[in-house]
Image 1 (cartoon, rainbow, N blue to C red):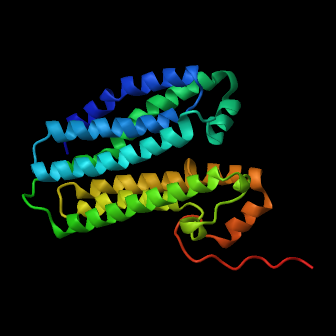
Image 2 (cartoon, rainbow, N blue to C red):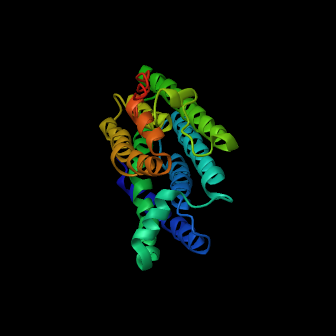
Image 3 (cartoon, rainbow, N blue to C red):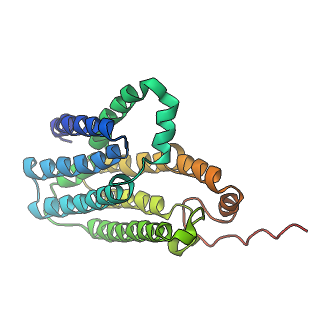
Length: 265
């Protein structure tokens, strides 16, 4: 694997995250760090496609796939979590917990995103460096999985935002569309998206390194920054209604929900 390109990618995103950290100091909204991750990933993937030799068609294909993924997610976050919006509750909780040290800790968090960008760019680097002259059946299968994941995540995000826009739904839990089958269908398809690159890396040199993407992303969504934070806040805001949703509906993998609890006599 081209370690030099990997290190350059990490260094290249430091000014980006520094600028976004400064911006969020003026208008506190740490979701800019997540937007910065998406922007940085696009820049790094472009660098890989321009600087590394390989099959031009495969490089353009992988670059386009990574670019579409990162642009869609970044634009969604900016539009619905940053522009004209109050800071996400999970970041507000951290800001309150850190108190006077919040500025320093958020600086470290923003700069930590540069390392995250480098790590999550590894699957793209592996695929872009693949010297095989023609696309394999594994790559075509991976492209299909990628398309399904992007469509699924887009659909889930859209369903949730439409639900939230309706005043009558204020304080309620979305159980429409994909949210009927999973409490976090957007996270599920995010994980599937990273699995697509593992399939595409079958038979490629260093293909096992593509496992970094889904392992770290799914772990973070299930155990760190995803489900634990959002569900704790949902229980605080919606109480028993959300507890019932937790009881009946899978947290991650979509499946048919359990029957609702019978009212007590």
